[in-house]
Amino acid sequence: MPKPPRERIVFSAAQLIRTQGVSGTGMRDVVSHAGAPRGSLQHYFPGGKEQLVNEAVAWAGGYAARRIRRAVDAMDEPTPGGLFAAMIAQWRDELTAEQFTKGCPLVAAAVDTAAVSEGVRDAVSEAFTGWRRPAVAALREMGVPPARSESLALLMISALEGAIVLARAHRDTAPLDAVLAELRPLLDAAVER
Amino acid sequence: MPKPPRERIVFSAAQLIRTQGVSGTGMRDVVSHAGAPRGSLQHYFPGGKEQLVNEAVAWAGGYAARRIRRAVDAMDEPTPGGLFAAMIAQWRDELTAEQFTKGCPLVAAAVDTAAVSEGVRDAVSEAFTGWRRPAVAALREMGVPPARSESLALLMISALEGAIVLARAHRDTAPLDAVLAELRPLLDAAVER
Image 1 (cartoon, rainbow over the protein chains, first blue to last red):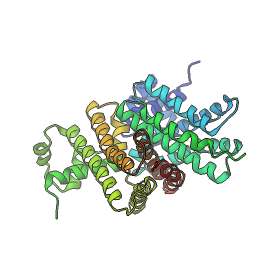
Image 2 (image 1 turned 180 degrees about the vertical axis):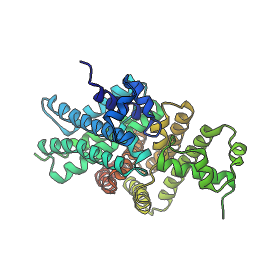
Image 3 (image 1 turned 90 degrees about the horizontal axis):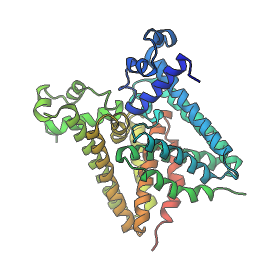
Image 4 (image 1 turned 30 degrees about the vertical axis):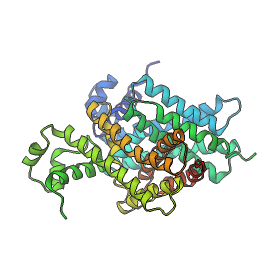
């Protein structure tokens, strides 16, 4: 089912930001990628590029959160290590399929825009929080104590994001495999019951 | 001692890339930040922006590698957890001092340029390798087996880089503290003698 034009534009913005960052993504590129008429930008996004970037970032955060919940639902016996393995596998597949051209739009927006746009920084902060929340909830349900659920969710997202950057730079999934191999036992050992 | 103009330009490029990414950094901004005459760019960097970015990335990789060696030298009894604590502390201090405006130039260059410039991607890949090498060597000297020295160095750099991005987004050093608290025991337990 084709997406309505507004959603298509937000999705296209996220895809371009993943590849070339916020500064490198022009509004014209987004319209052309979305196959949308140029006037639709002004119509749907009267707040201009910042509004569009913020919506793309919010979309990406929501997508990441849904993927956490879906990964947990797909496991017969959910474990912290199994959840992290699923997060890593999704990115390994995607980086390989896209020849390492597309990274995480949250990282892209944080690194080239956080210092110059308070609005985008806020949007990225909320998106990371929205992604972390279902991970923390899942870890707690698996029997990880509350305080460690918070710090382990921060570790999972930090290590994944850093490994994605390294994998893109090296065009090699080895960093993803290394962080999974090292963290899986640590994550599973955090279950208390 | 003031830096010679060529070094000043490379340093300025790295500082601007840390704040606003590669795409967001114009050659004019670099010249003005370095207090260099505009003609000096053409003189020192006939390869244009790509040459300058590649040199800034190489400088950053060399700087990170030197900081690893200095951190190891500064420890009476070097331990893997102590090395990671030093890496985290350097970034915690810097992010706090700069109000979270400056991140890692290698991440900035990887996320907005890796997909569009093979030359910059290569430079970032080499810089990450140059940073990892002294970390791997230090872990081996501390008694970590060779294979785990590789994967733990990848984990340390990945977790640090991801935590820097999260810290910038949230304007909060909590992600750095969380990854250190979680990884320190894991790192120290990898020592075999």
